[in-house]
Image 1 (cartoon, helix red, strand yellow):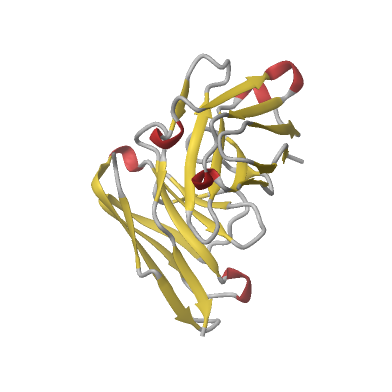
Image 2 (spheres, chains in turn red, green; image 1 turned 90 degrees about the vertical axis):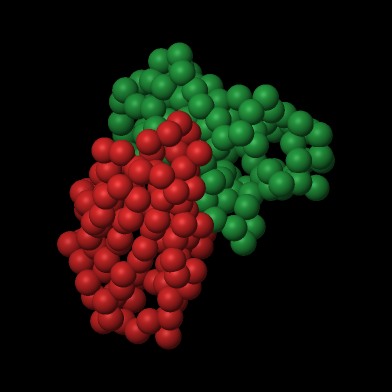
Length: 108
Length: 115
């Protein structure tokens, strides 16, 4: 089983700041089969990135994904008020897929 | 517009059963893997199960194997999750997703409470 570890657990930031979220896998995530989601309370999860670096339809270009192998990163270039949420990475090398524990981005 | 709408959640006693449904519209349902994901109170997302377009393959997280069954009816554009032998730790919001690996569209969720 591939275990995904996200860090940090919580980030307290202000609008306009740059955010870098980390996702580390216990073994290689081959073919960059890694996605990132945004999730707000009471709402459906929102796919941001798949294939480690491809933005999903309609996702603003301030969101970007990078990495390969066991280390992946989600970057938000400039935080907007609507970006405060929990972010999850997900690997889909194995079936069924698995999620990381999440990083909460909260308003400072 | 793509829509997936979950229903069937509720309060059930430990050991009981519940069947969740997911009604899909706005896309060719029979062309997509479909998935169920859940979130326990105060916890993160957990993948539950997914199923191939024709229903011939399905995968489950270890904690629900033998208790939950995912199925679909392509004629009705519907996805199901039959949940038996429910436990307190199955409590949470269950989301239906369009796609088997990284679903693009998700529903608002259906709350299942086992108590």
